[in-house]
Every structure is written in C-alpha cells, then in structure tokens.
Length: 355
View (cartoon, rainbow, N blue to C red):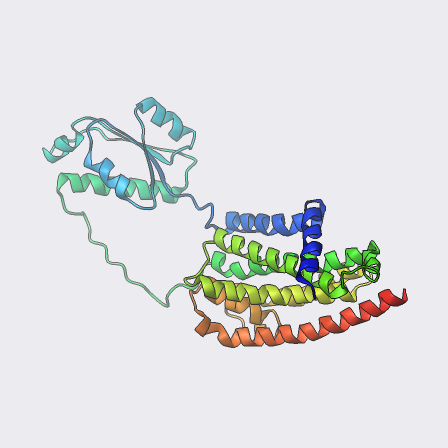
C-alpha cells in the first residue's frame, strides 16, 4: 500500500466533500440533535439568573453580587433603562440602590429598596435573586439570619441527570453517521459511478481506496465526537483516555461502514442495511436512559463495548485502567470486522475484474 496514493484518493474525497449531502449531514445533524436535546433537557441553555443594578452609593450589596458565581450581574446608570429591560425580560430582575443606602440600613432606618422582577422570567431565578437580595441587606445591617437552615439528604445520592444519560446517544449518533453511513456511502458511490473499475488499469489499488475512505470516516468520527462531548461539557479528566476510547469506537463504526459498503450492490441496499442493522448498533444507549433495566443486557450488543468506555471516561471521569477490559473486547470485535472487510474486498475485486 502506497501512502502517497492513499493521500491522493483522500484529498479527492475532501475536495468533493462540500458537494456531498452525506458529509454535510454527518457534520450538521449531530450538532442539531445535541442542541435540541440540550434545549429540551437543560444544560446548554439553562439560563443563569440575570440581574441589573443601578448603584448610586457603592453599596456592599453590589460588590457581593459581583463576586457571586452563577449569577449574571450588569451595572447600569439609568433607572428607566433598568425598568425597560426588566419589562422586556432582558433581565430577570433589576435592583436600584440609592446613595447612602448602606449607611441608612446600619442606622436602623428603612430606606426604599426598588426591586423589579420580570413576569416572563423563570420563577426559580426570581426566587434566587430576591432571596439573595434580602440576605445581603441583612448582612449590611449586621443582623443574624432569621432562621437557621439545616439540609438533610434523605435516601440515596441522586443519579446522573437525564442530560448526562443522553451523552452516549448523541455520541453514537455522530459515530454512526460519520463512521458507518459516510464510509459506506462513499464506497458505494464509487461503485455506482464505475470509478472503481478504472482502478484496475491505474496505479491506485482497491485497498488504497478503501483505506482513504476509512481514514476520512475515522477522522470525521473523532472530530464530531469531540465536538459533541465539548457541547455537553463531558470531556472527562483524562484527554488521553478520551482520545483512545473515541478512537476505538470510531474504528469499530468505520469497519461496520466498510462492511456495509463492500457488501452493498447499490445505495438502496446500503440504506436498507443502515436502517435495519443500525437499530442493533444503537440499542445499547437505551440502557443508559433506563438505569433500572438489567444492564447486562446491553453487553449483548457489539457497540456496547465501544460506547461504554466513552461514557465512563467522558461522564464519570474514568481512566484507561478502569475501562481496559471493555476496550480489549471492542478491539477483538474490530479484529473480527477486519476479517470480514478483507473477505468482502477480495470478493469486490473479483467482481470488478469480471465485470
């Protein structure tokens, strides 16, 4: 196999890539799916409380708010501007602190505290901002809290959130499109265009074309998986472990794509395989969504051994030492798929030579 010829085929695919709807779909659809899931289940668009403050006297309340994490605070100069923006729901609440407010509170007076809330804001954000404001006023006054709150956890610790359990689904979605569909489609398109037949009279070998298709699918699988995990803030604590697990998962999906592409006569056959057999490839993610189900059932499906290490590393912060057994099984499955790909490629070469 000549690396230079592999690169030539790969470069040709990259140049033609923007014209391919499958390639664009492989890039756009996982991102769109992630945005929709995050919008529904929270995480990416979960809004922080937004507070606008007009402070005429350098109050301690303003300073305390600006040091708080999880609250977006903006200082404005005009009271009318605060009221207008709160009414338009650009802020959840607006706070106007007159000059000498802190001194008046400490002197036992009751200065006017103007606190405006948006009727369209989340009730939880209004509660957070109003409770914090009252607490900060009492802090300025030097008074003790009215009550002492003791938090007691009842029952077991909370499980992973729905958004976290959805991570395997969006990752395997990206892997199936980029690794399986794009790789298989690219190979079948070469068949339908009769370009593979020209290989027999050119220096480029069939194995080099297949290698170029596999590299494209693998690189795009890794890229889209990293993007999806970054969008979900699920990158784990070990970049090396994350890269290795995604590499193995991408390799498995690319090999499945090569099996589909080499074994399909045309696009109709390929899409039938993709729609039918990919249900089995996608099945393990269901067990992450329903943790009360018997988890051992997920191990029946081959893609479990590739996607579970990704989940453990990206979401639970595991290292390679924690997932090496699953990775070994996944690599063994990849070995079996490699034998299948080699057999199908030999059959395809014979068909091209006779046809």
